[in-house]
Image 1 (cartoon, helix red, strand yellow):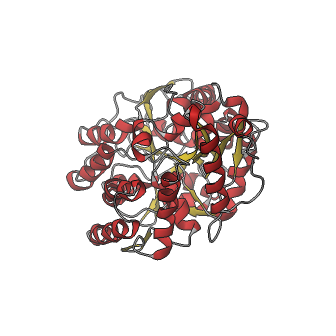
Image 2 (tube, rainbow, N blue to C red):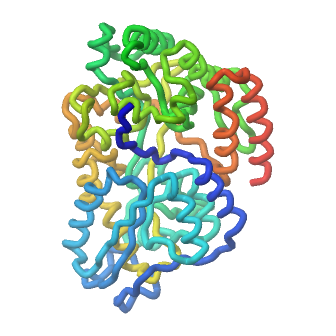
Image 3 (cartoon, rainbow, N blue to C red):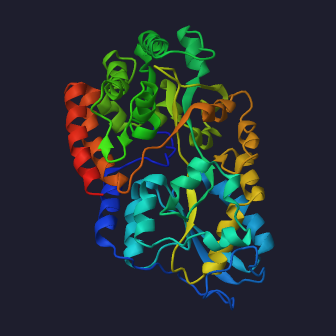
Length: 444
C-alpha cells in the first residue's frame, strides 16, 4: 500500500509519550523553563505585563513548539501578522512529530530549555501546570489582552487548574466520518444522508468491504485511540470513561461502546488490528483503500492534495443510544520562566486574537476556537460539508481527563487491543482495565 502522509491527532498516544508524561509527574519538582535568547525589553524581567501594554518595539527571538507539520503554513501566516505588529520579535517554529513531542518536552522541562511558547493538550496539561512549568494568563486577562469569554467554556476549563487558567485555546476539534465518495460509487453503495444508526454504519461498511475486497479496499476504520474511536462510541452507548475517582469501563454501556469496534473488525468491514498497527487508518484512507475513516476535524489539513481530496464528503457519526462526539482543543501556553516572557506573552495574546484565529480558520487547518471565526473553516473545502464538525457541538462531550491522564491512557493502550482483535472477551478486558484504572485514579 502507498504510504500517504499521516495527519497527527492532537491526542495520539504512542506508548513512549505516555511514559514520558508519567515520568514528568514523578520526576519534576517545580523546575523552571528557559529560553535561548534574551529580550531587550526593559520590562521583560517582570513577565507580568500582557500584550495590551506590551511595547511594539520589543526585540527578542522566540521558539514556538508544535507537533503538526501540516499546520505550519497557517502558522506562518499568523506569524506574518504578528511580525507586522512586532517587527523586532523573531519566531523560530520548531516542529516535533507527535510520536516524540512529549518525550522531547519532558527532556526540555528537565533541562530548562522549554520553548517560549508551545502547544499543550488536555491530557498533559495538569501535569505541566501542577509542576509549575506554565505561566498563568491571569495578568493578560486583567489587562484585556485575552478575553476567555470568547472561547468555549469547556476548553477554558480544560486549561484551568485550581482556579488559575494557563492555556488559551487555539482551536477545537470534533469527530465525524470522512467518506470517499468515489469508493461508494465504485461499490454501488448509496452514500448515507442525515442521521444514521450503528447498525446502518456497520452494514454500509460491510457491503463496501465485500464488493471491493478483491482490490484490498475496506469499508471503515478509525485510529483505535480514545478520542477518535472508542470514547465516541462509549458516550453514544450512554457509558462513561472516568467519573471522578472511578473508571467507567466496567459497565454494560461502556462495554457496548468497545464491542462496536470488535464487531466491525470481526465482520471484515475493517482492516484487522495488526493491519491498522502496520498502516494507520488515516493512511488507508488517503491512499484510497478505505471508504470511511472516523477521524477528527484536524484531518482536513491532510486533504489539500492527493488522490482522494476531490472526492471527500463528511458524514455525522452514527448514533447509538444517543448522538455523541468528543470535543477537545489544543492551547498555546508560555513557559513559566521564559527569559522572553513579555514577548512570549505578546505572541500568545496574538494567537488568541480574532485576527489570528480568522487566519487559522481560513487556511482550513483547524477549527478556530474564537467565537464567530469558525465559518471560515466550514467554507475552506467546498462540497465536503465540513459544517458537520461544527454542528456536532450540539451533542459534543468533553474529552475525559484527570490529574494524571497518562497513567490510565497507558492502561487503555496496553489492554484494549485484545478486546478489539477478539483475543479476549470485551467484558474480561474492560473489567481488568477498570480495576487497574481505579488504582491509578486513587493515586492522584
